[in-house]
Image (tube, rainbow, N blue to C red; front, side, top):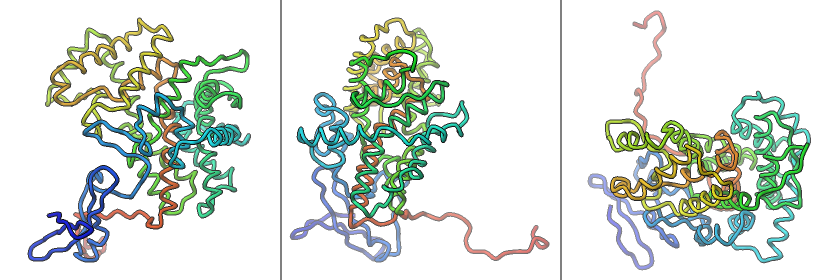
Length: 436
């Protein structure tokens, strides 16, 4: 396949045998160009084969850009480092949804809108009673987020821009409330209502850790860490759960159902469960003295063991979110005075080795965001079963922004991937009496 320059456009030529076809090459603002093969089947009778869609652009988007080779993550053009250092989560939500950072007036209005939607319908409390007490919080989230469409009929018409906006704000506002309810339900404590005088992260921490019988004061260091975690996880381009939300949305499904689908996909251990897996690995290692044994296993190609929380499918350089999360992690540990936790001792020693060991450097197995976020969330008091739930809270705004962009895209079509069929060819039915 050769690319060649035309007068105003570039084209790519695909040759198979003595036949060839030309396709337009589209350039993005930054990043690789793409070959538009939308008419490949109609012209050639063939499909492309790309398991995992690793070389396929499924959509055009203006929201998030990743350069894995250089370790770059941009939300609407803004580096993640700047947003995490100087901004807050709701400001980031506004940016992802509307494309620009808010003015002071827009920020105040948006914050008020979100804050006024944090309560959920009172019947949701009884809805939770249908779950087993030992249900995983993510299973509760998948069910309860999908159930929002049964409570808020006035914001499910996807053709109405006002209803789309209301649904978007409702989900950003209500996901932390549902998440805290899932947590409280799992530990047998009463639900805590949100408080409108608290910021987004502080409100969530209070709903998770307060009890009715005593006053709860939010630690500002932990609230800032929680807010930063939300910013870092808010969007990550066309990952598995985001693609799931877009695919579900392409059928015209209501926004609550689409976000529930995103939650279901995120639950997978290869996606949102990675920080939980990283912490489990630290538990398996158990003590600093055992680290050399596990490092040796990690370097052995014949050993199935893999160090969780190191390296990234997209980032071939240091994960830019990990740098911020590393700093946040140490801030939380220092604030809480945690110095003698064996698990954290293992984590810190693994971090030291990974940043200096030639094997890790050569393989670019740097500690990733899941490594640091798992340690941080554990230190803050969250059980591992809640890690993916917290991820879902943060990612909700990214899912909504991507869903909203897809709905408003005139080129949008219902998703319909093709396949390479390798099953049986056509054959005739044989009555059971004649089968051998």
